[in-house]
Length: 150
Image 1 (cartoon, helix red, strand yellow):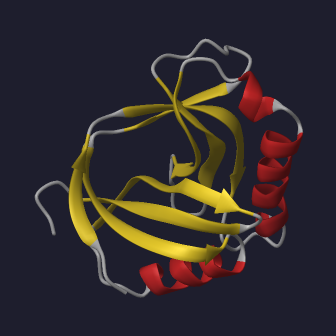
Image 2 (cartoon, rainbow, N blue to C red):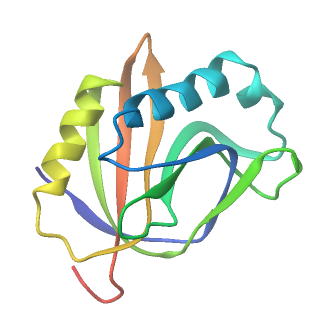
């Protein structure tokens, strides 16, 4: 799977969060539930100071067994204190561009990414949904790398 190395500036994401792990039996339900509530519950449309209309699925606050998942939008500043705010740190990221089904092809891409020997920092990894037409999307997946690593 091909990828590019990019440098990103810090971003602020505002949305809904939950804690889970890849080993949790309800991991898919937790993440899917966040997306369902975010998109179907009017949360997306309520977010102020949006940078753009691209939804973000952020994975952060990793420990040995779990991580936070946040579904939201990038904002210039948080004007929705009732929602979770997370920061995507500036730094070096590997970016994978995919196009396909928002569930099946995204899951397949993550499986392939996990098999690539990247020098991951586990600070923040995220999916940025550039377009979504009836469940077929153009998506960039960003993996945070250890500073100076490629």
